[in-house]
Image 1 (cartoon, helix red, strand yellow):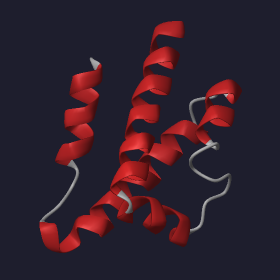
Image 2 (image 1 turned 135 degrees about the vertical axis):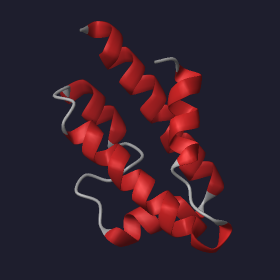
Image 3 (image 1 turned 120 degrees about the horizontal axis):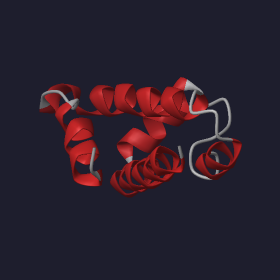
Image 4 (image 1 turned 90 degrees about the vertical axis):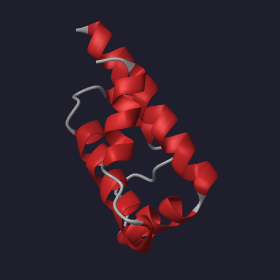
Length: 88
C-alpha cells in the first residue's frame, strides 16, 4: 500500500460535513489504536510527541478541530506506518 493509498483510505473514512469532527475523531482513535498495536516502541514514542500518551476524548476532539494538527497527525501516521511496514 502506497502513502497515497493510505491517505485516500483515511480520507474516505470521513463522513458528511455535519459530522466532520466526529468522523475525524473516530479516524484519530483508529490511527492511535494502530500505533499502540504496531509493537514498535520508537514509533510510539514519536507518535506521542503529537498525540498525547493515553489521550482523552477531548484530546482527540482538539486535534480533530485543528486542521494543521489533524494534517500533522495524518502525515506522521503515514510516515511511521510506512517505516514499520518496510522494516518487517
